[in-house]
Image (cartoon, rainbow, N blue to C red; front, side, top):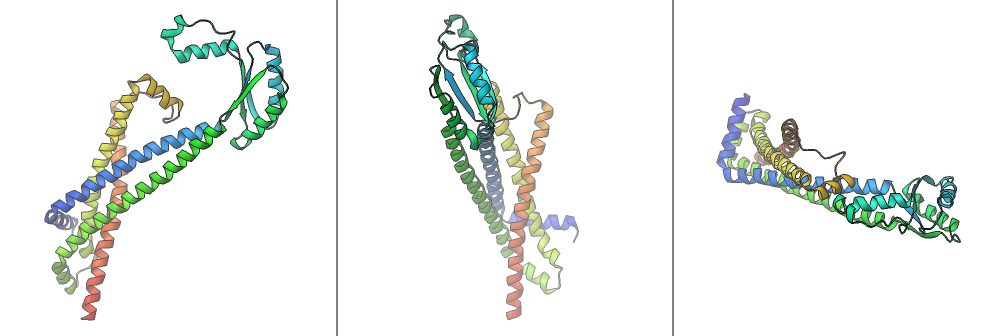
Length: 319
């Protein structure tokens, strides 16, 4: 059979069950759009958690009256330990500058100089996440009787909680995506299977006359491909609208923009997309979603057709 004939037959199949075909395309569109959104959110959260967890910090605060030389002496001792990767000294002046940044430039003129009250600190980074607690123990023993040390803070509990939440969301996100894809595959199977049943007599005649197996199968497989292409195109467009809309929303809000960049939901600095980026983004999304959707629909279609042909030939043998 020529491809034009196969395509014509596939379109005839779709017209025969147009409502079921529309439902299949709609479900494919929704499944891949929602799956893309879930993947975007979960991967963004995981990236943020991994970035935060890969750089655990321990903060050693001193009373405001502590001399800089005494702090630097403790810094050198801590830095010499093999469990420690780096130690940074934040003076009272630097703490004041950070306070001004957090409050915003509009409030700077109204801020009273609190330099003398702000505590200096050492920011310690352990070599890896597993060494955070041993490092804290080492530092606690080192400064146990030091009257200038105010407190030690570290974020181990926060890191572990975030990792647990991230793991929970990842597992459930993947499960939801898998279930959605399986449900879509089942619907495509039902749709193609319905058409196979509808054209059952035609298939029997073709099989009886010695028709090639490809001639029997390909129209139904192409039908599935058309479902996948249509669903993939719509899903690609919708997912791009979602990501582009979120980008515009974030760019218009300085707080959201800073949050996204600082928490590594995005790589690098956020910038407004150019027309070239928009066209390339739409094309990339459509190609990616269409490829996965077509793969799913081809597998579902082939399972439906082979199952029916097998049953048809088995019934003929028993007769």
